[in-house]
Image (tube, rainbow, N blue to C red; front, side, top):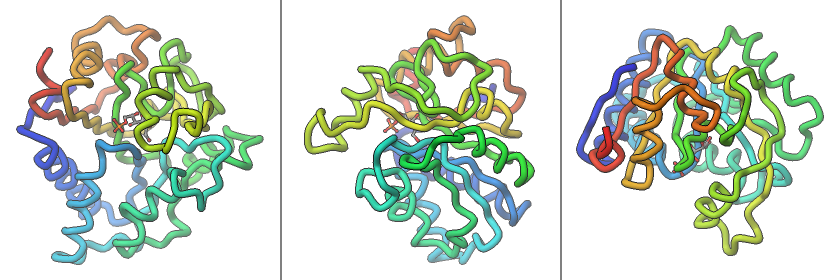
Amino acid sequence: MKVIKVLNNKEVGKMTAELILENIHSNPSIVLGLATGSTPESTYEYLIGDFKKNKTDWSKVRTFNLDEYVGLEPTHKKSYRYFMDEKLFKSVNINIKNTHVPNGINNTDPEAYDKLIAENGGIDLQLLGIGTNGHIGFNEPGTSFESLTSVVDLAQETIDVNSRFFASIDEVPKQAISMGLQSIMNAKKVVLIAIGKNKAEAIKQLVNGNISINWPCTVLQKHKDVTIIVDEEAASLI
Ligand code: F6R
């Protein structure tokens, strides 16, 4: 596990985007695993800036997002499909047909998502955020390390933390469809990013904790190619 400490959110975004760009340049039809939430926003901003300036070619890039809220249509403004379209896809020359986000409405065969990823040759580079409780994707504490994509219950802590994106806590979906921990471990390369003091404990567990389903992120200690990019606050306990 390689840990890179940088100053702040902006630097996390720059370093992460540069790493993603390097990988796109060496493999233009790369399969990227992508995350939503606040943390990757600075990365996506930098990627858009690069596209404007350097015209990096996204036309062959394929993407698979980690998760989606159950019950939200792809057009819903709080859906992760909408987030990705707005924050990245519409501002680079990606073919929208090459972008995949789990479907929060039609999700009777969640593992079909893992099959589709495998048919595309597997994820080359998986970008991850991390929850304050150590979740990756929406794999909450207690999730089996063997899990594949499935419909999952969100932990109360996740509902509370994510209520900042909604008008009221009652609007936060209680379930999501999420790639599993095994789905994430299948990626060839993992890049996990974290910003802020409230992630410090999860980063400490990820780097130094015992491998345990109580901290889902610790499964990554078993992966052979993980890079962690953190700001000073998220790194304050390691
Ligand atoms: C998002 C995801 C989650 C988030 C995590 C951190 O697709 O899978 O694991 O990465 O909840 O969210 P933020 O970045 O909003 O703190």
